[in-house]
Length: 50
Image (cartoon, rainbow, N blue to C red; front, side):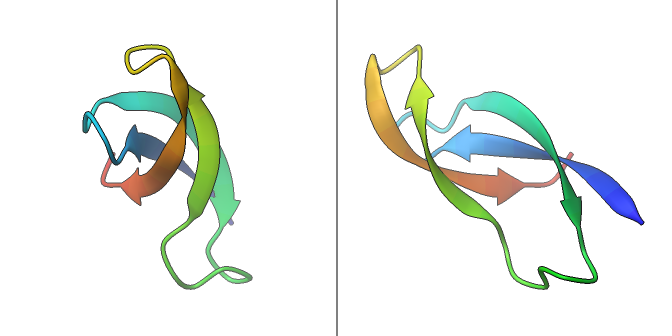
């Protein structure tokens, strides 16, 4: 039931994190504030296609 998804930085568009998500409980796209090692700061990361 859980699928692996990738999170991409909204500032530099690089894919930094891979997480699992239960699509039954969360229908929309996941968006989290995470640290981007390329930007050097905490930015919004949004779910992208794997």
